[in-house]
Length: 371
Image (cartoon, rainbow, N blue to C red; front, side, top):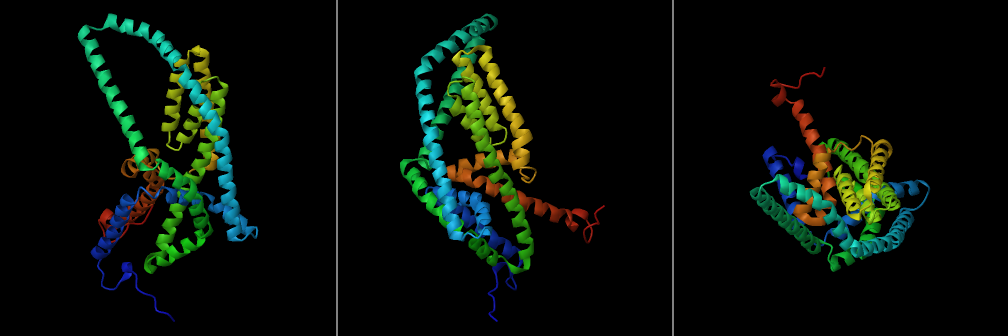
């Protein structure tokens, strides 16, 4: 019988402090590599995300006696063909609405000026010259900060992954990465499982299943919710007569990936556009009805059915992880933020459960019996 090599987590004589330093060193090396390679990781991370999303479908085709290679080729080809066809339909609509928006900008400015003039006159009558001067100074300062933030965001995006070279790599490399990862997904999982420290393999497998359930509930479920809402909001706002309705609606639906933020931003932008467009209360009311129905569909139909209560990730934690990932690693960090947040969440709950069952919490020689 072949003797297995000892793993670092179970090497005889390795103290708990040494094991902790070993794992912390591994984590630090991973973070440093991620930082150094963040400029080239986008197509690989995107391919991994698509492969994870499509893996259940490949498993179902295997159950129908498809070979893994044939199932992978069929699913990958179908997914990217559907994506390309969708873009061919969506991009011309966005282009046409964008050109219409640019042509109507002068009328929007005049409409906003006509609506704002009575309010400004009222403010001038109620405020002293010093208060007006301070208000103008504050508005100028905040406007300059906002412009600088937007300019910095655009600069970071262009530097961090949406430049021409990175975009080309995303288009041509992602399908290849998706195919090979999806084809070898089960083999990769089995290989990683063989690397787990044997004394703790059962516990690690249990926690990994929880992480997978969390990711499946959020990534697969929430992605389906987002695309459904993007189609609804885009169509509904267009039919309501809102300029840029399809673009705003699609962005609102996709923005639902960030809980609450996407819908609120979409509502504010839609109401601002309806006001600038000069559509009156009828258009404003139509926009409000669209968002009320969208929230009802999301809260009572899509989210309970597609996501359910399997996620276990608080919305504030998701928002923080997305912002932190984007600030640290750009678009790659945004893609990796939710999986990392899921891992941290599961590990934190596991550590908390261990703490609550330990003598450190109970102050005795062992855990107290649960009621």
